[in-house]
Length: 429
Image (cartoon, rainbow, N blue to C red; front, top):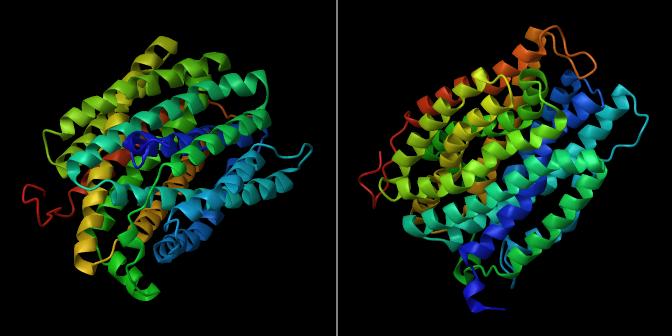
């Protein structure tokens, strides 16, 4: 094992690649699979997401708190990740492998059960992997570099999961696709954790009691403003990726086989643009870069309204890619500073609970996305693939352009509702 690979941004980013392949395939295609292919009503799909969110509100912060209190010879985070790898693989396969012949009610029960199990395992992984980032990489410059590399890997994963998935499930089927992606996840997540070495001093700190830990976290105004703002932008990420298959079918009217080309136009463009944003970050402080990325992201979704065919869809997708690239890179700089500041106040590195609470806020974006789908669907009469209503094209124009624009405007406004001044960085606002 090469020492240069230990805690390297390149080997650490393998974990992002590993988790994003199945996670993106899930977020992009679970609605299409259950609603369009299997005929589950969008009302039941939204209900399942709502029930999950209640469960997530409890387990997400607790997983972070337990992670911070873990103390083993192998570290605080690594044992959680290694233990969850096989469960995540199993539950991901379960999501896309419902038995045949299910009624609406039994299909709903299967989806809800698989969703709760899969997202619980995903929570453990994201909390512990995410908590390692600010611990292993200290300082804005190193974090900016590590974030750019990590997001480069993430974009490759997004491209694979988004662009190749229609090809795979068309050639094979959804259960086979899930099996392939589960194996990819297992191999790369294992490799990532083999090259992680946690800082020993963080495991020796005396953790805060449960009530005090949550009280300090919940009273941090900068943390809340930052994450609530991000949650609206994160909703756009999930909404756009999940709506593209519908957008391709009902708005652009292109064959299902060409959905991969449309998805590739977004994610291929993001790969070089991530490093453009790294160049931008090096020339302004992290908070300003983060706010600027939100504004650019909001503007970038407008051209999606004007798509009429594959070519115009590809052009709009490349423009969205620039906005998406900025949002992928910039938040890690600000969140790292917030956690560093908390460590100065408490004397403890509490990445786990901060990552977990932030994760819950961000993951609640899934409910916002589901509600947007439900409301716009009701307005235009779209119920499912079996009953798309009189004007499904307008349904998905609004869902992929107008709704994301409104959400990003809210995100920008919230981002300016607090001053982000850090002790060692008077230029931050």
